[in-house]
Amino acid sequence: MKRPVGIYYAYWVQDWDTDFLPFVDKVKRLGFDLLELHGGILVTKDRTYRLKIKEKAEKEGIVLSYGIGVPKDKDLSSLDENVRQQGIKFMKEVILAIEEMGGGFISGTVHSYWPATFPKGLTSKEPILKQSIKSMRELAPFAEDHGVTLNVEVINRFEQFLINTCEEALAYIREVNSPACNILLDTFHMNIEEDSLGGAIRMAGKHLAALHLGEPNRKPPGMGRMPWAEIKNALDDIRYTGPLVMEPFITQGGSIAQDVGVWRDIVKNPDLDGLAEKAAAFVKAKLR
Image (cartoon, one colour):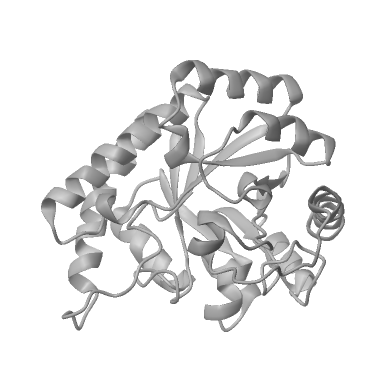
């Protein structure tokens, strides 16, 4: 399917660790093609549970994809070699779990950790970048062998420091030089960091494997001022066929709001299902 439209399960919950199974039926009913799950949580579930999700998704015709914010104690870019090795071990476990689910891609801080601030005492991120590239050069071939693609997410400066622009991401994946290492752009982060949203998409070109969608304040698509026509034109220019996965965060409370910085209800008394259904229809009409 060209440009399957998806949503991240975390839109509906307050904490990352939850039962994923009910979301398969929910996203199907609301008009989505794809459900994105947390790869780090998935690996903590047993194999029987993972296969239940896989079977249910196949039955409903729902594609599965995965996101991750690697925790700091498993930082793949750490200058502490023990921490870096723990990160590699952890990500290999995640990759194997995704292989069990039928393969696909995982996006996020597959190259570092999240949320992150620049380490005190350093004046350059170059040493950290080298550690990250070393990790990815080991992980990418492993991922390729197991039918998984690692998408490096370009994240704004307030949540991560290593790769903040598409230009930095392109330089990074060229250093890694693997077909299993690509780029995820996110309209929320691009709105903060890029001079041109369309320009960033065109710059990523064939390396753009997935696109996250959200308004500048992380409302669902169609509720704000994001230049969707500009984004659509750029996607058409690069002949993009990958997924369009919305990642709205609009309610306070719990570990998710703490991590993404939601300190008030962005939408008052929201009908979460209703807003998601409208957003799915909007994205299909405007971007596909």
